[in-house]
Amino acid sequence: MSQHPTLAAVLIVKNEADNLAECLATLDWVDEIVIMDSGSTDQTRAIAEAAGARFFVNASWPGFGRQRQLAQEKVQSDWILWVDADERVTPELRASIEAVITKPAENTVYAITRLSWVFGRFIRHCGWYPDRVLRLYPRRLTGYNDALVHEKVELPTGSRIARLDGDLLHYTYRDLQHYLVKSAGYAAAWAEQRQQKGKKGSLLQGLLHGAGCFLKMYLLKAGFLDGRQGLLLCLLSAHSTFVKYADLWIRTETSGPRE
Image (cartoon, rainbow, N blue to C red):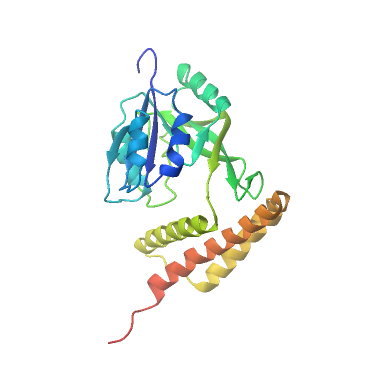
């Protein structure tokens, strides 16, 4: 590693023109910005290049995990900070990151606390906060797994996790339609991944897991303290949980029309 460690902010994106400029404005202090695009048709590329990002395209979508691996292969810096286009790095988080890479602990992956804005307020309960995500690590230490969705940073043997100070602000859904479209995409990827592993689903599983999701988020995780937004988020999360299992059931337990 060099005497003065360098840092790359890395993003995977598609059609993020509405978010990208504000995101990149909070990253103007890093040494390198690497963006892997999966086939944007809006102004994403122009916005990225105007901010000085190195822009690459892989339109043959291989899943979230593999797309992140491809992006990491383009990085030249010593350290990697993963950010999504709908996220913003706060000044406190920036200071914590800069302190860490100047004097890092050995074999350590760093967790960032994410605070999400949903339907008009920051969600501080529902099990959503503190939402700690592994986003900062030395490039040569590790990377993401191959998962189609809900990909994770792999932890090498002997490594440890440390927490950074400051929040990563997450402006997750523009409106209800955006939530439903995004949720349906995750559900389809989840069902496909389970199907590939030979798993099956049932509507009863969906009902039970959906009900359990609501009770956990709204009561056990105090979602009621987030007001009407908390109630709506818990109901939508229960619905999304049901849809995952319904999708898997349709894929594995139903057949097409008879000839």
